[in-house]
Length: 394
Image 1 (spheres, one colour):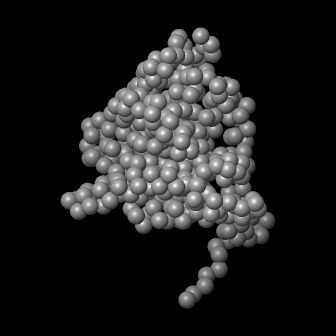
Image 2 (cartoon, helix red, strand yellow):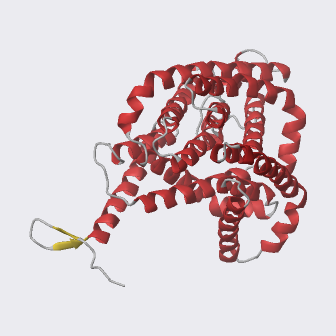
Image 3 (cartoon, helix red, strand yellow):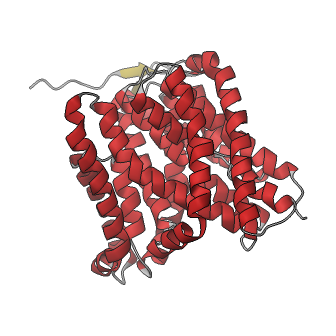
């Protein structure tokens, strides 16, 4: 085996700088820049997700200042970011909350799926992308960003409002439906021949079984990992996240979905402690994921699809508004509260980005990725803008 010395760069004074050192300098500059982005978003009372995406586009391939980060580094970072992001998303919901949302808003979720899954699905079919990518594009336009939704509710102080509860319930059911359907759709995506029928049925049954086990027997798992020492609990949680992701991949289920199911399976009081311990990681993992999503996307590929992404964002902004209006009407909410419920649902983010990221990892040059990226960016900007323009009362 031949050992090679690391490449070096030369400073103006002639002193060599190891390549590893330059990478650390670049990463340090990136994270300090991201801290400034979060400061700006906080000052503007705005979600940082679209701003982080823009930073990734600026410093990725074809950007204003492309950083020479290795593909394995970017790919691994994206995968770990998706795992942590979906695990934290699963922690937000308990089995009881999922069941209550299902009982209260199942008819509304069907309306939601019809109005918001259909545009992306039909667009992909029209573009000739085939059934698997059409199903995935429908998922991109269907699912609301839970992170942006929670950020808006917290920022506006609407935790106790009826329209906020309607929006949160619909978001919970969207995440649940995507978690159930993503595994079989990904099997169909990777195996389009007749041999896909067996794995397709198996992945659907496994995802349903995993969801049922998570809801019914989550307390057993929580008791097994619970410990008074917070370091032990934290290490156990991170180990389980990676283990769940690996097992999910072995069962032909996306790793991020396995992490999401694990988050649901964790029950109180471990869930509350996990939220507190890993709370900052939620923002960090979301930042890392959307940064790497931007780094992997050539901004030059966004320009040709931008008009289509704008039309799709506007169309699904209207259909989400109609979805919230219908659900709020059924819940007995009057006046502008119906509009506010719909506006809270407009922004797409984490799960839409995860879907785009999974496709990007498999097919980096697919036109699906730039269109989905542009769409997520536009809708993440549109949602907060609309909600801030609506009357706060009435």
